[in-house]
Length: 263
Image (cartoon, rainbow, N blue to C red; front, side, top):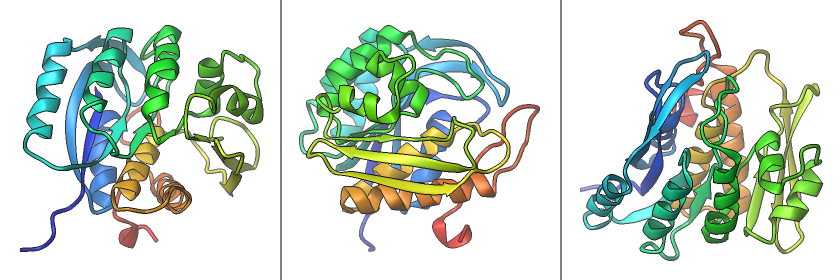
């Protein structure tokens, strides 16, 4: 028998188009050599164009799903995505408290790629106050970081200064700007910073944030240190966007193949 793949518990929403959400988590984690254990927090009505509706599941169902995983499988990493309500934030806190010392990647999903809301700003504030202190790293894009920091026009540095008291590490991605190069900035509570630069790709993408956060959770579950894990996850995500296709009428879907296939 071979050694089992590291298991990553994914707490996120379901996207019926398969471009984002739990399917993105599963594909990105498989590509890292990990096994995804997807726990559904919400159901959405969305496609490559936008999201039109969502429904957050009852807490009892989410707790039961997570319990089924935790009592059977050894969880090596956790990825948090769409939660959708303050009550679901509290539910996820209960789950995380059962898994101390497991690396946690928090992707504070508040908007779909097309701009539609996947949770009110108050959900973001609850995540900031209750989940970020439990997370190893949070991965907001700049618009999300501004919501979390309550700085509508804040720079990445200003948002980081406001958010680092809540979390150990913060990766603010720069894909929503219009510069020729994309600057992804990693901030740590000890004062260290790193900037990862890549060429901006044409078009827009559905599920890029899910891909990055899941790949990062996989790298941490494999035992990589935070700097190496961030760099590997960013490189992998850029390659999935470079090779993306456009199956629908809206955004492109990342092609989440293993690193060996998207070099």
